Amino acid sequence: MARKKRVTHKFKTKKINGTLHMICRNSIEDKAHWSWEHFKDKSRCNEWSEVSINTTAVMCWKCAHSTVPGPEVKGGYVSKGRIRGWQFMKEFVDPQGNVFHKGKEQPKLKGTLKPTEPKPPKKKLSKLEKSALQNKILEQMSLVRGQLKKATFKKDIKAGNVKMRKLTRQLKKVK
Image (cartoon, rainbow, N blue to C red; front, side, top):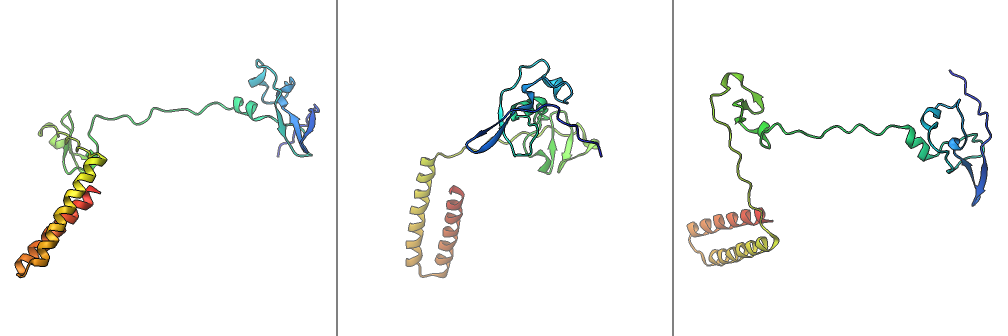
């Protein structure tokens, strides 16, 4: 195990509201410390940090932050020019003619099929349109319920129940 280096300087300390604070290690020129190469051309720091009784030296958060390089930010996702969800399609053909079956390339079929056309996006309903559609479906459901109460034949009851199930499915889609 390596021996700890002794601190050759006594750093200023003071009590603030009953807690001990010490000035940053970068407040003096210390060429023996590992951080000197980062701070030799920068101005001296005057930041005070909260410490315990036995602390001999401290480096403030600002100086510690400046010694660490920033994170390497790589470019995000780059699209390959294929439509969304192409891996999950039973058959997909990209613009270059490559054929894929459930995301696996089929080199034997390259250039034999025309490129897959993307589906047009669905029109989203506004809140007002949704509420109007819900009201319309609920009105139809109430009419069907009334017909079910009046129905006497088995075939009319079954047809009414089928209409009710269809309307409840439509209502669930709208919500």
